[in-house]
Length: 191
Image (cartoon, rainbow, N blue to C red; front, side, top):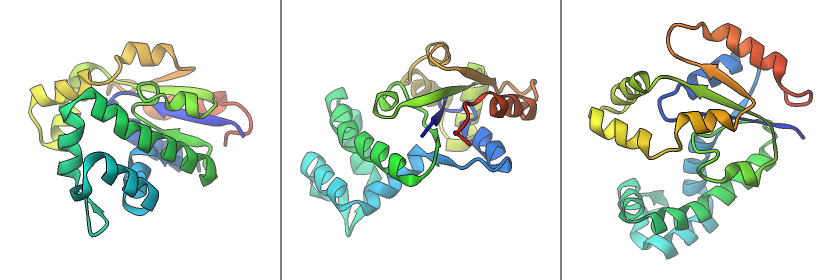
């Protein structure tokens, strides 16, 4: 099976590109959404997170995001430990899902690219000021908090350098032709 990964920093417009791909019949596995689903449904993952974080992280089987967030922000070791529970489960779920396309903001940061053999990697990029504005508007947060989130991820130029194709989502270049060019560029067996 040939897999395609779509990545790019927070606020770059990955989800919008995935909607355009859906208009062409391409189904894309959303890592963030599926990780949340797995945390709420997968009993083994819940047990591992409870053991690591503490029992209150789930109440009546429902993830308490504020408790998990507090734990994650306490140290990089905590982040790594949580990632070692979540990322392998998401990778395994993706491989079982039947999807060939995947969206992940932290494809390289998380090592997900080493868990799945992607034939093609796509970066969605956007200028920093546009990304920050999108994040502020979408999440209702301050500029400084949005910048903190952006800086917490791998720099966009390093992500783009590791990809086979870059879609520029700067508000001036039309996206539809870039998506069509992407679709004509992907390896056979990925659609």
